[in-house]
Length: 95
Image (cartoon, rainbow, N blue to C red; front, side, top):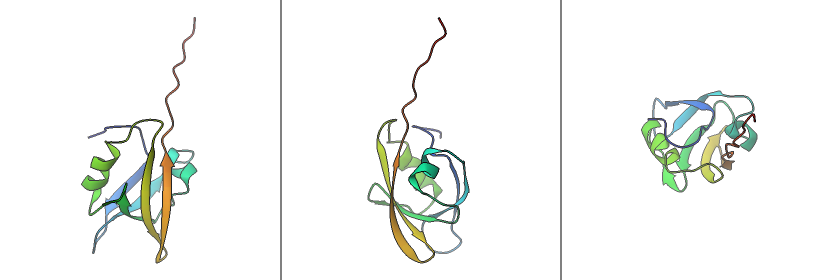
């Protein structure tokens, strides 16, 4: 289920409660540039609750390159808003 642009993170469901934990972050990815960190718990995406990994995958699938995914994350017990701007793929050609 790989829809939409790549976020650059690996996630897993949390053991108790709702949300997903960022367990890996691709260096230089759109998520990294936006300030997402390993260990962050993503609770909302574009204002919708993220209960599990499937919820985030579904929400990410609605986002197009060049647009923003608005995340609400818990980091060390504090809430943060992170806006991930998805890079546009720039077409190149050797002529």
